[in-house]
Amino acid sequence: MGIIISLLNHKGGVGKTTSAVNIGAAMVELGKRVLLIDLDPQANLSISLGVPRQKSTIYEAMRGEGELVPYTHKPGLDVITSSLDLSGAEMELINEAGREYILRELLTQVSDDYDFVLIDCPPSLGLLTLNAMTSSRYVLIPLQTEFLAVQGLAKIKQVIDKVKMRLNTQLEMGGVIATMYDSRRVLNRDVVETIHKYFGEKVFNTYIRDNVALAEAPAQRKDIFDYSPKSPGAIDYIDLTKEILSRLGGN
Image 1: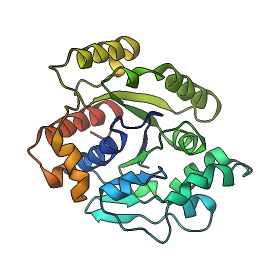
Image 2 (image 1 turned 60 degrees about the horizontal axis):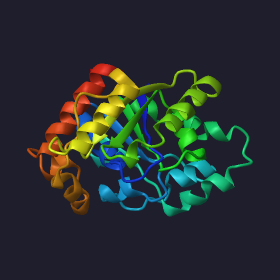
Image 3 (image 1 turned 180 degrees about the vertical axis):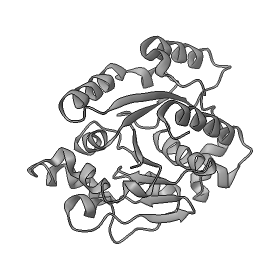
Image 4 (image 1 turned 180 degrees about the horizontal axis):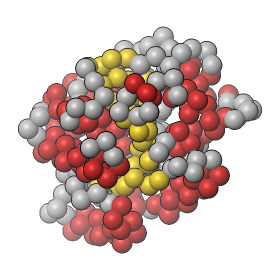
């Protein structure tokens, strides 16, 4: 069974989708077979890779109206797409028995086909994110190295601890990813120091530098390795992914 990892932060704009796409792509570069799941109603992951709208998205699958059908983006990298309809799923599923486990049950159909399953969570701590955490072995937290981004870290940790205690005893904090980092900025360095104090060794040693190629790649519907394989963004994500594989298994 593949190792299931959720990328989670209830604050938007922290590099969560960028990290999901490019960690997944880096794993493929390193010889792994990866499934990306777009669990965000905004469908930014699906859009970033240019994946066409599928007949059966994660919404239909969670509603029990369709199968979980992976779309092959490129060899070794498959995607389960999202749609705007998913924004209504939390209200539609609220009365479902075992609603926290819907995604976990779906993933038993496909996870054996992959080394890793990466879930791009919505910027909230609602039912969709709860489903992701209940399904996962690890949580990764991408964190922009800005002052406001560190607000609410205690809440994220509290939610992870509650899910571990009540719903998924296997769940662990896999690590914190510092994103949009510029070593020349005092604020960025101060924020990294703060998250090191709070999370200690859980902070990955590789910081994702602020790099224009990472912003340009989604516009070309490509991951960073297809768009600019020698860019600082590609270098950082391959180094980060090596750390992830070493720390979480699969190396």
